Image 1 (cartoon, one colour):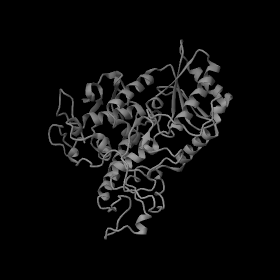
Image 2: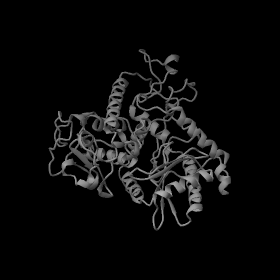
Image 3: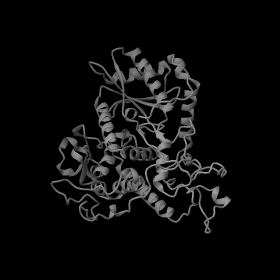
Image 4: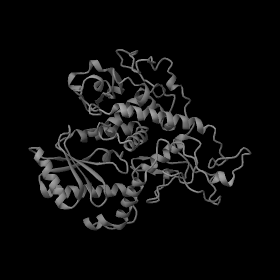
Length: 454
């Protein structure tokens, strides 16, 4: 699925060399998919067991589901979801979009998890101030935009007049070890953005500290603006970020795609989608279709050799040969051809994807996800459900005990939650309920939070 080209050259090829590009105003078979009839709110049933958080709300946006009047609380228990699918609760799904919404709700941070991260920021700030009293400790990235996953890094930047040098990385690392707040401390001094990485000792939350760089702060502000303007950007970003994370392709210093570039890719996809452009579909009501088409575009169709993308001025594609030299990565030959080019909306001289050198592997896993979800979507059309849309029905349209004990996930071939993530969230829940940080900072101990959804 290729979207519109630049205004100056609308028929520029942006697909693979053997596939013609279809201008969005012309027939485009990739967008001929029939829009999903599933509205964005899924039925009740999936829960976040850590704090019994209602799934009618998630941290970072507002969404309310209609009450399912057909739910029968006395109907009897089911045996539980398949392994790795805790978001399912006691539900089966006839529509992929419903399950994807429940999955997004499940992996979104709870209010208590966010509060724990705020405590970690306070602890890091206090520790850094003990070393450099004139340093400002600023949190940025997914913490501010509410786009972080349960095991996402906490991004912090240190700012001070006069800046820092490479020796300061080692000074900070040693200070963190001595203070006792950090485990697995690592200094990455040779990356484009030098970092001190560690895991906070109480929670195990990973923390990345950079020095005197404000572009991350500016990026977060831009992302927040786009999320407010385009609501579908948030759930799609959570889905793609989680997918990259479980495939180990989310670390830029390892050649993966970082959070900022991920958001730009999704935003570009939404901006250039022909059916969205003309208002034929509501992205919030077609999450499953759009996720499949995202994987199709960047896994099979996008011509990385010739084309780059920008989200400035409502988005466009451009030919990479026209890029200024300072945008390019310095790699040559095939490695250069397989690089994605994403122009930073905050800084047109910055290509945010030039460090993502593992693009060939990323493209392959995107293509695999496209195939798996497409097959699941086709297969789901042959599954029958009873009138409550809760359990598979037999050929006589009656729900048997066996069927009522069986749950089928439509997305488990692509999305699963491994036990280490579940255990990590359980650990965070225990830290909150025990009041560890509340005691440390002299705050009252509470067993749940009643914060309004942002």
